Length: 361
Image (tube, one colour):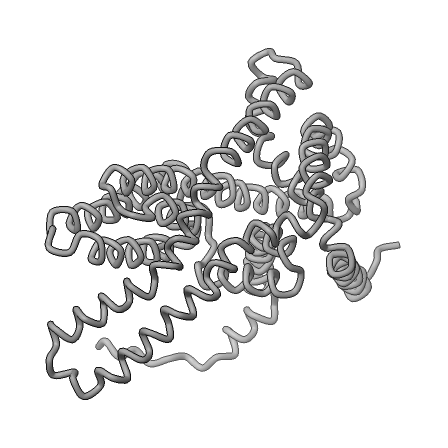
């Protein structure tokens, strides 16, 4: 006996509410498992390529996990402390930088003398706020991540979960496929394939693009000699998953620091500007088309909303699952719209619509 569509919808709604409830209650405890699953999903294509080349899956997983752990340890020892240190120094220098900005505006725009006091007060207050709260914010990023669970537990459980998921990935996929309702299995498989392509194209591709841009911006700004260049470059690269946001924020920070540091040296300031212009050309014309591709349809506004909403509701764990869920919801919405447009409701509404007169006679 076939289950009615209304009853099926209720079951799916109950499952979605149950998932949200579990995420709400166990969000902190789920963090290492979600992170491990994300790592496994990210590395699985590489494991598949190595196994097709003749390498046993267990050996391929072991090699990739060792490389990944080594990269994380190396970053933790060499890069992350420097980035945090420069971020703290930047917040301490913010009042002086903003004061220099106020002097520049006063010198270049003398007609603004009437609002100079208000401008100076606003910039001074902004600088003090950054200095007082910025250091705590920069240092709190790492504390907020490691404080969700014990750092030791997190660092131990995450690679173990990733290792076993990578090892059993084909079995997990077959098991999930066996649990699909037989009546809707073909449609669900097709939707799952679209979701996988969307997530893979965006997450795997965009993470790679962000890492390349972070390395480029940090290295280029460091070679120019820009103070806080490492921190600004890493931040600009890592937030480039939203188009133009990384370049805008990083460019404003870098150019502002360049004006403060290289005042009277137009060549150095121009070099900083050129770095971000080249970065945008590199991102838009080479990296994104070749690595991410044009098939991923995630609007930047929808992406920002998903990250903000899930981060506010479920903390850091919610931020981790925001992009995959946003991609999944996007695929389901497009599927629902296609079903609606193929339904009699949509077609009848088109049939019933009065014919429109041709204005181009």
